[in-house]
Image 1 (cartoon, rainbow, N blue to C red):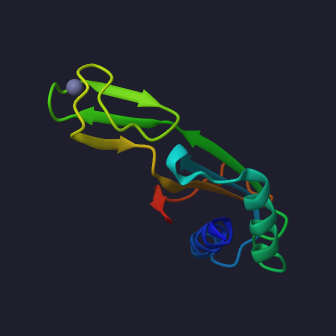
Image 2: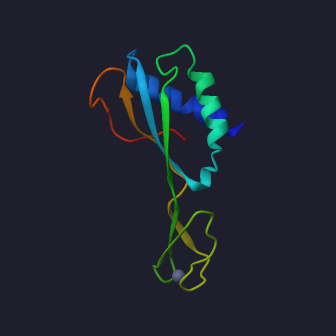
Amino acid sequence: MHEFGVAAGVLDAVEARAAGRPVAAVRLHVGALQRLDRAVFDQAFALVADGGVAGGAEVDVVEVGVEVRCRGCGGVSTGTELITSCTHCGEHDLELLAGDDLVLESITLDGIACATVGNEQEVG
Ligand SMILES: [Zn+2]
């Protein structure tokens, strides 16, 4: 299942950053095109993280909308689903700017204030 693969990838990134320290919370940016099922993902993450440094960690998912730029008119179109034609001129030659991201934004270490660490990291 997609969510399990994502959860495993996220866990790898989280564990790499935590370096053995207990993790209280995890924050992700997930593009709408990932079509991540939150309920399934939460379950999957809890399962793969169980017994490790991120076991029981709170997962915060920030959803990112879809954004494309038209190669015809240069206009930007946004939405919550895949955009196949420019909303300005109807052109189909579009460049995806945002929406398929899967980024570990931050982790919060247990018992350490302001312990958001590292830079954004692609996990997808
Ligand atoms: Zn256009």
